[in-house]
Image 1 (cartoon, rainbow, N blue to C red):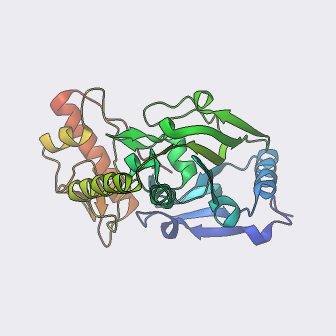
Image 2 (tube, rainbow, N blue to C red):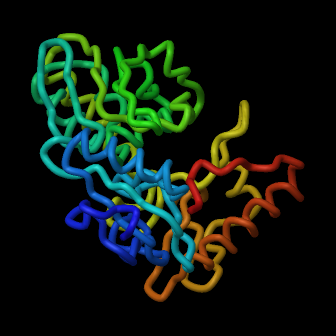
Image 3 (tube, rainbow, N blue to C red):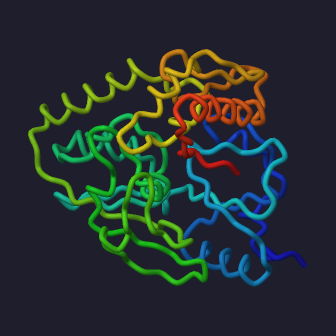
Length: 293
């Protein structure tokens, strides 16, 4: 009998994670689990706790580097109708933790609700976006949150306010929990003005960052206080530097693009090289924004 006995339909062994990340790199997950609803998720977490099976939550894989050797334990992916629901209750919008954040943003813009258009062009699921308090020069997601529904590692469910989530720069206080869903508190706005701002921010990112179709994981490093990581990397001469099939983007030095034939180790080697180059030049040790699994 396995730890997931009776849940075989939603637990697959040895699934390549390269098919589930933006980089398209990395080895397999020992188990890939896709619970259909909250009760199945709670049961998965309960069993993982009982059997000492380590687990992680995977969204769209937009901010993750999976090592070539893969991952032991369970990788839990929240996908399907339960997790991807988007419901409007003007001026609020209720969304599932697995909802595509880009789709959420665009639907709020189309309905003349302001707030999330400032986060145009940020990929990922709502759960992942909230977990890292994703954002940019025009704000972060925590500024639009009213409340977040969270499941603890023992399966217990609770609702937390934005203040209880402890949002900070690229961080929140999930305390090892899972984002089940969230409510965004938005403002009625002029639809055309909101759409224009959304488009302007989207095109601004398209002009300054690698194309969405490129194999990358967004910004590699966090911005140090009062500094821009991309500028520090550029000044250190990192643009176009390569390790195997991995290259520092010539468009924005805080992005690493994986070309055909690249491995996850190529990306990790280039990260180490870039971090050391900035440290030697400035004394600043850059902190990762991406997660390495």
